[in-house]
Image (cartoon, rainbow, N blue to C red; front, side, top):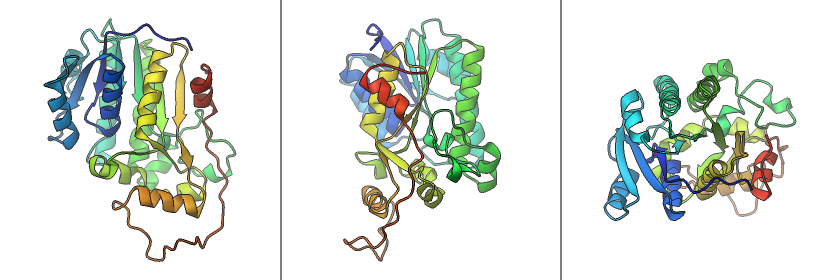
Length: 303
């Protein structure tokens, strides 16, 4: 692996998101100094944990930011070498949040372009930015070249998918225009410790249209610790480039679907007809591909 020299400081914005919190923890464990940029969304359990960590962790500094306030972002980035941009809305997604997330992504990338010390942005997106369009059920391979159709998402009111697609496209467009080194990670549904407590509304926003995702072979989930590791891996590997699909398990059988329901309980109630002996036997064709990430993890990188 072509690895960066250890960097002195990374910014995680928003560190109080579920993914951001785990990236923060793993960066500290690896010896990095971290700026935890936290949006003013009202104090959450994760934000409280981060502020408590600051009292005992000398390599952690917490900043309050407003992603619509360009100057507050600049302050949090000062002297940082990398930014992990995690803009999940803890309140979930509606039509208004789509525009706010796009504007926030643009401000973060522009702030990075104006901060000389920044070497790379790792942009946290989602599989929902790639899997939604009319003909997804006829496509054999859904991989990093795939994008969700904006008109389809708007028509079906898939606000999470629309926000992630528009914000990632906006970030890529500006990053290329401003010649900023950026890599994106597109995770499946994120699960992990206390996910139903710390990330309930984004989880439910991701799952809008879950039945169609399941039947089309594009419903997948991933453990948050693996997601955090992948974000750090694409930062440290100088050859990492473009987008990376990130998932552990594709849900394409009734057995796997029930496992996911159990993982997300009590956020999603168990079907009343559930029995230990699975009644259904249909297996839907898997369409998602993450060969690019596998190559990165195994031996290197492929654009």
